[in-house]
Image (tube, rainbow, N blue to C red; front, side, top):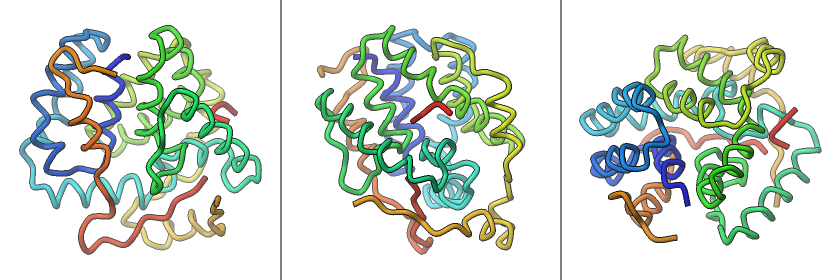
Length: 240
């Protein structure tokens, strides 16, 4: 098991008190495995620092505005591949079957294409296979990193790390195609609503290097949305 992917999963999860308290262990795990290079780890420091020290409500509000209120930053991978296509229904079924084969049982509240859950699955794979699996949505990671860069968000570093850990560099044309799509500011209500105007489709292990799997599992179990925030809308293969 590659625990670095579990740490990256936790960093992309909804901020909770447990996540804030676990930041020292997450740092230790990243350094202990050494899969993320020293330079890449340094780019993750601003996000880790903010998660550890900033007001929790502010962290939660920012997370919801970024990832739940902005379709172009959705953490649901199939949103960027299949959109409202019927194809994503079967893709969700196939991905869920892959998880179950690996012994990973998704939370009933999470769709299989939710990126933190996908990274939990990647963590169960042998290192070479994990990198090959990451390469499939690497163009999505690259596009999300660029959109977050424009917003000066520290979450950009997580996506840069995922691209670097992928077995293959994302194709420029695939990244460009994603970046050509609408990318409204979450605070622009009219633009945000227009981006979501399509009707939603619904479809009915030991720790090491100081990184505790049980703790990360609890971090990943944090529920959303933040207090007083609207419930996020959810959408349903990884490569185009």
